[in-house]
Length: 423
Ligand SMILES: CC(C)[C@H](C(=O)O)[C@@H](O)C(=O)O
Ligand code: SF4
Image (tube, rainbow, N blue to C red; front, side, top):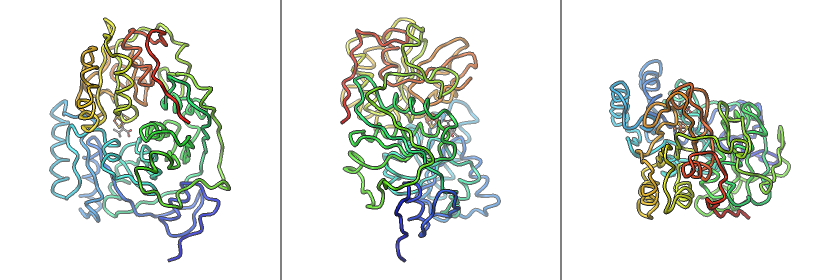
């Protein structure tokens, strides 16, 4: 079969055209093969019920299905424990990949296991499956019914999304991170500014894989179907990138947003919306009860390094708790091996099992009424981390670390800014 003509197509159109075996554009409907279907613990019961119900118990490619027990892991109550026991048993019986309690957050684990590849298509039963776009993989979240159907048939149907291109140019100032970039992009687009779009995030080549993951992860908070970062730099060094997975200067975009990285500053998403983004300085002095460093957004080794560098030889402020939950067992092991964990523990950090932790407010660090939390996660809605009367500020690991040190939101002069230069 002749490969389809890809001239003038966006990244999303290219990936779906190659998959569909014909040239498709935004608005077209396609049925495509799926490389991997990822199911998280909290959605597993509904997925299992659907596979065993209407779908007749058939699963086409069991090795293309992954179950990850991560959202409330270890189990916090009998109900969760039972759901996880059922999911564990079902995954083993059906020959699925099983990533059990402690292995880490689904998206981090899929990336570490190489299950999301440039040019591929990966579905997750979780909205932050956009993270796989960090390597140019069409990663997207779907509900239990679509996920069960994809697991059963090995295929999914999609409307090819329009593309919103975000062109990031210049060099990030010291102390400003990919998280600040992502939040600034969301401020510009707003929470529904990229609804069902492919958010094409054109970064400078120097952006690391981890930084690209932070950007792609947050794409869904602007409503995006997928967040695709054109492969370059570290991604090209570590992955095999198909020659057709490139930005075409003639591609048609629904909208183009340009952002000068050099003009960015540390920001926070203030409660209760992710697009309520303001300069950190607007909240200087706000008391912080809990700092949470972790999640699929910012729980990787480089994030822990930033926090450890700021806390080294110092102590977390009296009256503030610092909770650190590495995104995966690999991150935990690496942080143990290179001394990062000792630095954090010596500073007074509390360590949790790799997984989602209190990100969704289900265990391991839920907030009391009136408490303020600075979190490196991606959602700050009312009640997200526990009490509806608690408040969550989303921020970078550096801002979180300074909050732990001073007990307030601050750009404190005495806290060393991490060196950061992206060419
Ligand atoms: C539990 C899961 C369905 C949910 C999601 O889809 O994102 C969760 O991971 C979240 O971050 O809110
Ligand atoms: S870490 Fe948070 S955002 Fe990420 S998958 Fe888990 S609950 Fe969702």
